[in-house]
Length: 175
Image (cartoon, rainbow, N blue to C red; front, side):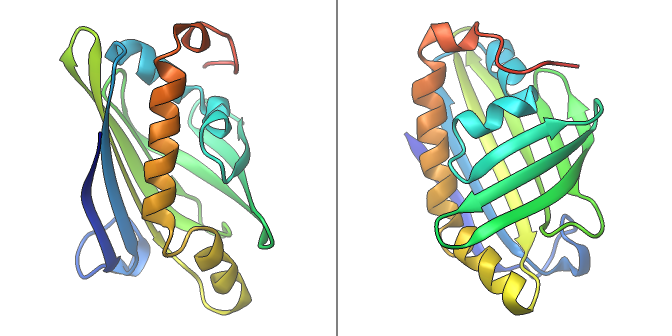
């Protein structure tokens, strides 16, 4: 079901997180729905808290800019703004947090049709926890359990998406 593509500790090369230092997690899952339907649902960023447990809300401020709020039991709240830096409709959404955000991260989600009714989804997230108290909060919220959290979120996403009624519901405005 879930393929653990790679879970790495501190990054030695790459460019998604400034200073080439960060934690990167890549996970893949196959969902029994058409690629276009899954892409459209995910692109409505306000839908993400429906299957990502740590997200309290995602507000689309413009077509490319969004505000995110994450919460965790006993760890508090983190907020950040993100910008979509690359998008290929039906195939790819890539983003990064803006300078000054609580969370220094970048990521992408790729959608690839396997058949007309099956889609492979591959998500890659890379982040660099800051030092100090905020860093401790981030590690507790996203830290060593990030790979497991993403895996659980993807399994839940698969379950939700394979219930066709949810795909057709207008949960969030789309640009």
